[in-house]
Image (tube, rainbow, N blue to C red; front, side):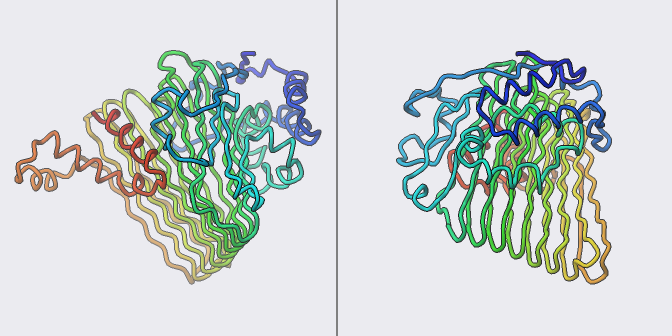
Length: 436
């Protein structure tokens, strides 16, 4: 069914039937219906210096099936390139449109109580556990119209649960493949790491809809309990036709760590919010983002770390490359609440512009309500450093290749953080295509 969200022509009956077809628990059906009832009265997000009122949030297909596969070798090469095909016992979920095409979790992790499955299976088999964390501590349903619509129309995603003191050595991975050019991804990613546990999760978003318009409305919630560690890596690569709203939120309790490494390589208009709440004493967050903008693309990125606990550390790094007529806003916000003494908020936002028409705006913001803290910020917007180019060219490297090396070096702090080599290489390839 194709729906028009800006006019909200669909109704409670559609949402209820969608939920019932999937045998969802009553609490999820009620949440969907209540969210839909709220959506029309809620405002749209209001990203700083970015007008989104004419962006497409209304034309899309809400339901689209995809083929399942029995072997990873059945996938096209562009999807295989994200994977180590030869590796046995991969911890992997592949969502094809709104169908789980492939799902695998090692027996060892199953025996330890780890859950890694699609969101609908999780609602069926782990309903109470999902209900405890789903849009309760991270992203709220009523934050804005798009979060409410996400709650009402959620049609995919995964659930990750790591029991107390379980350390997952190998990364687990999801691939979300928007194969149908009109299919909207209302994906919900929920990662819960219990006390003393550790997990590395990596996801990829892929589409090819250059002309057809659709929507990605993605919500991620990462809950890190006491002394837990979550490393979250992502490569978003939606095509030009997809308008993206992505809201990634983390909650870190006492001595917990959340590390974000986000390669945001969409070609369509994008609003991205990455917010981490350091709730417990000694909690730590590191948020790294890189992007390349091109064409007439408009993007707005906000990375925010809020310190509630004492002796917390928050680091934000944003690097962007703009070419042609692309424009991007980078907001890095460190907020230290009253009582969060001994905390440290650091941020760096830097933008390289490769053409006269490209625009980049780096806004470091510190909001300090406590005296006994440390904080710092740095921001820059400019061209490729001529000194670096001269140094490389003086050693016989042609200018084009020198610029390429400088740009890859500029984006390397995030690219190198991705833990899966195939994903890291794929991100480098995407950067290469977008810049050259």
